[in-house]
Length: 213
Image 1 (tube, rainbow, N blue to C red):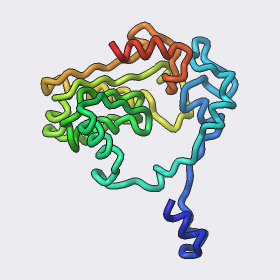
Image 2: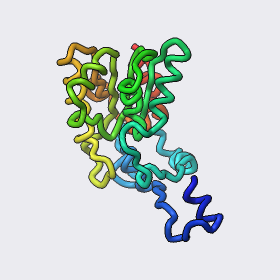
Image 3: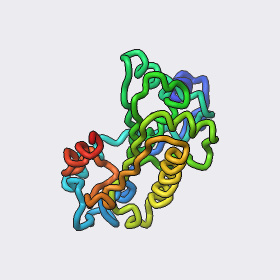
Image 4: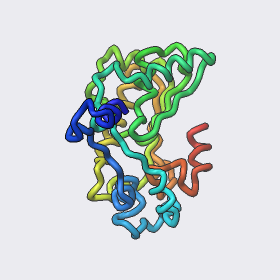
């Protein structure tokens, strides 16, 4: 919030206000894979699309695109790792833009981590991880989860097929290093229609049980 406060205090010009990303209902509909276009749902869609207005009310301004930090300076993974260690062990779960935070936390301090769950990240950064980093991550059981209709949205801001392929490479690399990593692609497991918002989908308890098992 510092740049906004400095503009308000007259320390910066209004032209220096950072950009904010706010998803419209139409963009959310396609990015989150509720259907091919606003108002048209996939026939097996699990998200309760009648609640799209309520979901839109939960949308918050996103500054992440404007404030990209160099690796190692984002304190969230660091604090997650510290918290897991403090409480005597934890399984970390991340989703979407924070999907890879559990792995980033493990790379910084794996002492308290008992498992890593990554749900629908935009990338697993498979191509950027060194063999040493993969070996470190391979010591912790890992689960990556993706829903359905990854190939069925044409105007999405996220390339979902590429994200799945990247994370499959990541899972394969972990296993090749002697780790225990699983890719849970729900359609391949016989569960159809899930959106990016798995925890809000109508079958979220079924998906939750699969993650727990």
